Length: 478
Image (cartoon, rainbow, N blue to C red; front, side, top):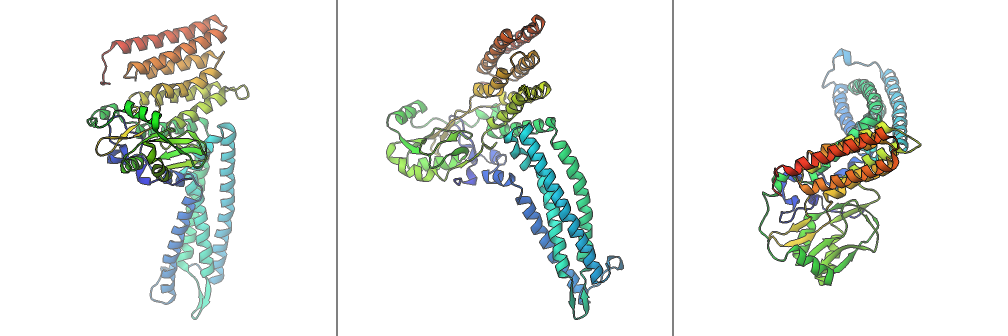
């Protein structure tokens, strides 16, 4: 994976917009790709909790040494017997905890296996990054480490056997905490593997990604500077005519692009960069990753470009909201397969997709143009269009829903709901196109006349909603 600057975890800004990385209001919402990578592990949180347990042991054992030296005293209720009794208590705690750790790990692996089989392999990351599972595993491992350290500290000293009474009492308290954590974990896993919970969680990720990546329309016109230098069309012609290619140095999914860093690179070399891929695209080693104009700046830009992007073996939600849409679509088409035949799960996915697209309709999908401090265009990047995201949400489900009027009706109802959230005519045109294709699928595959009449009725309702919105004056200036 190629490193990228964590300070440049932004997204393409609109034509005439300053890069979002320079906007502190947006920086608070956008996590670093390094943080996202750290979250998707099962070792980071347990390691941190183990370090906390070591620090706790250092504090309690220091107090016990003061008690042993008779500089401090303990209440009688903290006394845990002689050295042998203390060893037996700590050994029992350590043995019980490490046994439960094995059970917790087995349950976690079982949940991951079920997720892979039922929800698809791309759902694995959703379960691995679950904080509840990471904390549960960490608490038990930390308790085990603490108990082992306490056991090793029980020795023979000049005043007889050294028994760390406070440390043993803390180990007993941690064992009680572990019981509560175990009860929570069983409840958490039982809830987390329920399909509606998984779908709702992905939908929340989609909502957060949309809010982070796309500004509200009210904000999209307030920060528009005057154009300076060459226009976008002029620069695109120059790139096509005499631009130099920058090849990818490795293969993988583009996970992160440091847009602010690329603007600085281009400004330093008095160049213009055009990215040929956006986050979520698969990049092939040796194929063009970007174009640079003038071509003489390509070697300098190529050397810096490697530090401004990250490639990996999988897609992530960072800078790629389409990935969350694809996850919901994947669950839906798995549910519609003849092997599963779970219509209600597909309907649930469609409902949440309509919620995400309704939120997206209120956002400004920018043109992917970045400017430097002198307001000169320095970076032109890919950006998903509204129609493309609508197609990603509905195409595959529609193609798998032939002969299933319930799913076709729900698709049309979902698009009607999204239509009421749209603010532009071209958004409604994308939805009308989808509605026509759904009606065509119904007429070709639904043979029951009354079912077909229901589908046609929903399609007419969609058209009526589109016509009504088109007749209303625009609420937000385009």
